[in-house]
Image 1 (spheres, one colour):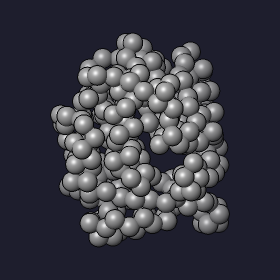
Image 2 (tube, rainbow, N blue to C red):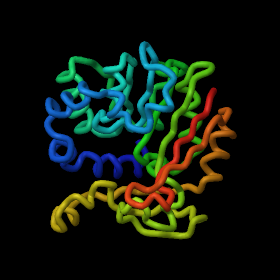
Image 3 (spheres, one colour):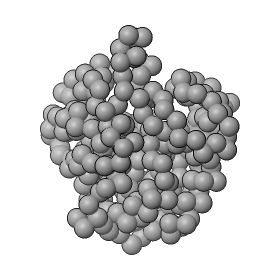
Length: 250
């Protein structure tokens, strides 16, 4: 595992299970919400899936299972790849409480076993801001391509590169030049929900943020056919870009 992945793993395992219980409720409570309206729990991402039943989905950096469990409830065969054991515990307990199942591999995404998982999936899906955890975007996209079978689809939703120059999502991360290629140390995304004392104790992550052209060109270089690039407004200010969703096909 790369040094920066080890550092990010420490950050994402800090108090993670307790954090998800605080934010989402116990696994049983979360499972009831997921089961009541699985399509609603997918939010805007539901529009990017053609169908669910029997679809083999790799949920990249799927965290606490907030999208994996609804997808499984809708009939998809979901495998989560994530770096945190604590995330796995919450996700798998939620799936069990919802009377469904997910496969969950705790690993560095860049070290996924392609002998086992290569060409296995119909869809690779990621959301919630993950690209900045990977310092070589081409390496990341090559692995996404390798996970898909012929005709498979990548749904990549992430923080809009505009957030490099303005904190439109209020994540309390530093602004920088839009064209910066700097790798920098910063707080993990949910550090802002902790008190100052705990916040000082939390391990930091190492980030590399990308421009729109870096993301799109990497997708194309790695062999994908780009189908859509949608921009979404910031959560609290619809006049500013906050996220994007990219769809590409192998």
